[in-house]
Image: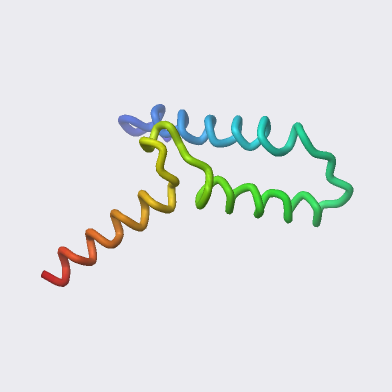
Length: 78
């Protein structure tokens, strides 16, 4: 974590954990560890596939990832 630009990486992780806490964890009560695990899986599925992100120009992370992946595959095929 001491390389150039590493401090900026932390911004994205901190923002993710803030979103998780305020949008899921602080709003719900979990009766067991299994309930918590299920809720976290559901939240991350929502976060990556359905929730629009302002920093991604209102796209989802999956849309950005798969569009970049398909562009890369197209370049290899050409």
